[in-house]
Amino acid sequence: SQQGEEDPQALSIQEGENATMNCSYKTSINNLQWYRQNSGRGLVHLILIRSNEREKHSGRLRVTLDTSKKSSSLLITASRAADTASYFCATDDTGFQKLVFGTGTRLLVSP
Amino acid sequence: SAVISQKPSRDICQRGTSLTIQCQVDSQVTMMFWYRQQPGQSLTLIATANQGSEATYESGFVIDKFPISRPNLTFSTLTVSNMSPEDSSIYLCSVAGSRGGYTFGSGTRLTVV
Image (cartoon, rainbow over all chains, first blue to last red; front, side, top):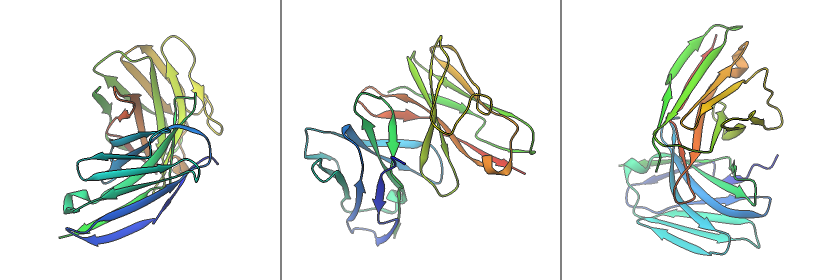
């Protein structure tokens, strides 16, 4: 399978703490994306980082990409209860225009 | 970004029957993607649907089981045929967004009994 791996599988933190999720993938990529899924519903696109970028920020989100290690991390700072969701990384394989999703991290933020 | 309306949001079906899932996009798009998410799992691409041509299926998925229609640039359907309990999953459609990300429908939660 080409599916990426994410760790941890589950993460439980308190409001105000930071949450870090890691993603590893297997192939060359055009870009890597992070998505959030609430309660098994549709996915929401959070952020995209291109293969020639190393770090990107969007609000409370910080994404890093290390193509030499085929890995990425998503940091959510000052977490809120509303951040409780599953988070998936997804790679857009070079030239194929289709997403390959990681295994996901379930984040629980307690008030 | 495009907005996708996906129906039904959930259904409970008898084994051996078929269910057709619809996705309507509020803008014209070339490619639509169909995914399956088995309970507690990640998403797996079923097929890519282009208007005017046969859908392209991923390894492990076949047209007889998951026929797809793409009659125009804003609409697509996925049918889950001859269902068994193993088909119980969330099915999602998706289109490419304006900034490289993808927009997803709200998903169809299918339970086969």
